[in-house]
Image 1 (cartoon, helix red, strand yellow):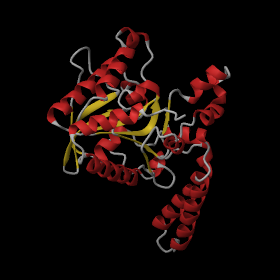
Image 2 (spheres, rainbow, N blue to C red):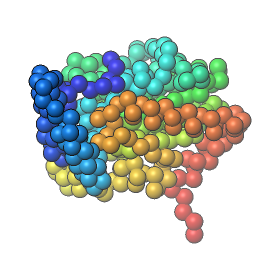
Image 3 (cartoon, rainbow, N blue to C red):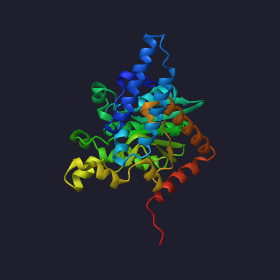
Image 4 (tube, one colour):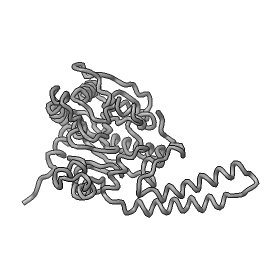
Amino acid sequence: MNRAVIPPQTRTFLEFERPIGELMAKVDELRLLSTTTPELSLRDEISQLEDKVRSLTEDIFSKLTPWQKTQLSRHPDRPYAGDYLESVFQNFVELHGDRNASDDKAMITGMALLEDIQVMVIAQEKGRGTKDRVYRNFGMPRPEGYRKALRMMLMAEKFRLPIICLIDTPGAFPGKDAEERGQAEAIARNLREMIKLTVPIICVVIGEGGSGGALAIGLGNRVLMMQYAIYSVISPEGCASILWKDSAKADLAAEALRLTAEEVLTHKVVDGVIPEPVGGAHRNPAKASDLLREHLLGHLRELSRLSPSQLAKQRFDKFMAMGAQEE
């Protein structure tokens, strides 16, 4: 489903976005009135209201808390991996199955064109709407999802294809069946094999980057985050439940976890932040897609200058340096 334009009637507003929603509703009313009553000239009034919407949005989004950014990363109208597969890439051909157990629907994999570059895409998909979310297991892959991802990585290595990973998951599925089939082993194997690959790898956290479930496809030469994405070892709710025995203190946990794009970049866990349109990617998915494509192409061009051995060494050195302290 192409989400390039979100119809007005499907707009969802978070609590802190409601003043924006009220103004946008007035703009919609005036537009409808100008359509049904052509003799009325409402162009100036609409323009003034649109300026107010833009100004209010910029003001609200300039002082978002970590918890509000967490809510934005989960926004129901936010573009998901499947949306970007349609709007950023061309000629996507999905490849299924891990050749071991089954085909995990939370992990979408396949070959596509990024402009004129053939790439392998590995993406976590949450699903839109109740039925689709259940089908996609709410974006939480099981072991077969990570094994499918690894199969595609090794295929990309064989055919010398750059790998693009789109990360958007609350975490790996914690169910009994997933543990019985080796969830931890599947994630660990991905980490071991991914660090050694000799093709360019670009990973982008487009929404939630949750724990090892995100890291299992997150060892890239370049790791990027969308502006209102989050990246953390645990969800704020899970952290609050452990530290304070109260998941309602998720806002405090979000601040303590330093999970926003700006803070993760400051700690050098990611290499860059992809800006989003004013009001977030969900307010202008087409613009968000353009920005994502632009950054992917820019980093691919840089990485194309490195030899296979240099790519593997650069990736290994980057992750080995994380957390190192000089005395």
